Every structure is written in C-alpha cells, then in structure tokens.
Amino acid sequence: MKKLLLLLLLPISIFAQTNTLSEESLKYANSITEGDLKEYLYVLASDSMKGRETGAIGQRKAAKYIANFFKEIGIPTYKYNSYFQKFKVRNVRRYGKWKKQANKKYIKGENIIGYIEGTDLKNELLVITAHYDHLGIKEDSLIYNGADDNGSGTSSIMEIAQAFMLAKNEGNGPRRSVLIMPVSGEEKGLLGSKYYAENPIYPLENTIANLNVDMIGRIDDYHDNSDYVYLIGSDRLSTELHQISEDVNKQHFNLELDYKFNEEDDPNRYYYRSDHYNFAKNNIPVIFYFNGIHADYHKTSDTVDKIHFKKIQKISRYIFLTAWELANRDERPKLD
Picture 1 (cartoon, helix red, strand yellow):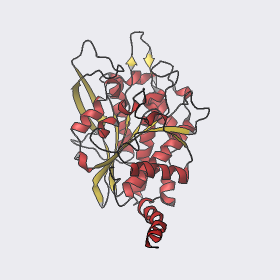
Picture 2 (cartoon, rainbow, N blue to C red):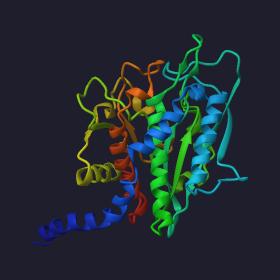
Picture 3 (cartoon, one colour):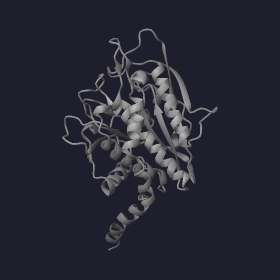
Picture 4 (cartoon, rainbow, N blue to C red):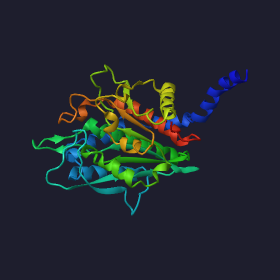
C-alpha cells in the first residue's frame, strides 16, 4: 500500500518540481515573432556581410550588428566596456568538414557575450549558443550568405535574448543567469565554443546546460512539412534534461521531435559537429536543435528567400520555454 501511494504521488511531486511555466512565461515566448526574425536574418544573410567568414571583415561586421542589438535591448557589456570575447587560435581539421587555411597559422574571431544575470540562483548559468559565422567568399568570388547555416540559429537566439530581457525588465527575470552567446569559428572547427569552454566567464561546473541552435529554418528530405525539429544529445548526459524538453513540447507545441540523428552509431556524427560538443565533452548536458541537411547546404543558394520563418518562430518559442524552465526550476538537471 505504501509503495502504491508513493507511485501515485511521484508524478505530482515531479510536476511541482519541474513545471515553472506560467501565463507570463507564455507571454514572453509569444514576443518571439516572425517579423523580428525576418529583420535580423535579412541583415545577417545580406551580401553586405560577405558570408561572415571567421576572421574576415564580414564576420566582424556581423559581430558588431549583434552586439549593438544586445545594447539596444539592455544587456550590459561583458568586460572592458565590450560584448566581445576575442580569441586567436590555430586552425584545425576534424571529420573532413573543415579545411586548413593555407596562408594563416592563426584565426582571429569573437564570441559575443550576452549575459543576463539571475536572481537567487545567479551563480548557476544556462548557456544558449548559435554560431553566426559562415563560409565567406570563395574562389569563385560568390558570396555564401548562410541564411539557414546559421543565420537562422543566430536570429533565433537574438529573439530569445529579447524575450528574457523583456521578462527581466518587468521584474520577472530568470533565477539562474543566462548567457546568450553567438559564437564564431564553427565552420573552422568549433573554434569559438572551444575557446569559451577553455576560458569560461563562470566555472564550467556552474554551467547547468547548453542549448545549441544550428540550422532551424528549412525542411529536409525526410519530412514533408515544417512542424519538426531534430534533437541531438538531449539524453546523452541527462535523461532529466531530455524529459524536461519533452514535457515542454507536449504541453505547448506538439512539434515532431525527431531523434534520428541522436543514435550513437549515426554515420553523420552530428553530435560531434556543432558547438554544443565543446560543452558535452566537459560533462555539461546539451540539446542541439537542427533541421537537417538540404540541397542548399554550404552552397551560395542558402538564401533568405527559402527560409520558413514560421518554423523558426515555433522552434524558438519552444527553445525559450525550455530555457525558462531550466533557468527557474529549483534544481539543475541531474547527470546520469
């Protein structure tokens, strides 16, 4: 009888512990709009950004644009009156995706630090990332605009930053601190996130999770509508994080959460190929949000006119509410 009573009470206690979503949090999620996402992405994927190659003028221009956005929404500067965590690192080659630059020993780049301080749990940190760099201008003199890769993810976390600041300005800021961090150097070998993991603004042991957004604006060949997102890594280190993510989706979105690429024997090895991996290898739970590869991947044809903005809006709201839950619940997600 006691065992039965415990089983009956357990779901209630878990719900009370994990569910911090409210009408106010939904209001902030709904502040993430197609119109704003279009505004950011049309700038980031414009020819004026010259493909945003790390170390090139276009990437630095994109960094200034995002930093100015952080300033406009009220996020304070990080250090020395700047939003930039600058790095200078050697190039690498990994899994055949990134090629060494023939004439450069080092690559310079900037991560952009959007730090939103928490309240009673401010010494714990949730990190939300997206790489804002792309391929630049190649030998054919054509600009690789990278609208989906990864203008879509960058626009998403800019809107998520705006939603958290709206909450904070209304006296409903997160309990834990939240770091919104667009990173560069991903296309060169995850260099920006690697540098951050080696030089964090808070000790890594204080980081409760990383939510990484990389390509969420298109539809791949495995789906016939936009109402899906691939999740990678959510259960690799913390089944509790995975369950939180699942619960938020079931309560509010009913997206198809596709785990096709989360299998450990996935030949694409996507788990190792975006910026979340530099957190995961430091034993920090992660979720990687991804729409899959499409015909325009790493081509000049990855342009804004092919983006599904309703898809980005819905996934961004989902990510925000997952982040809200993680930032405000009593306990951080437990490692398995």
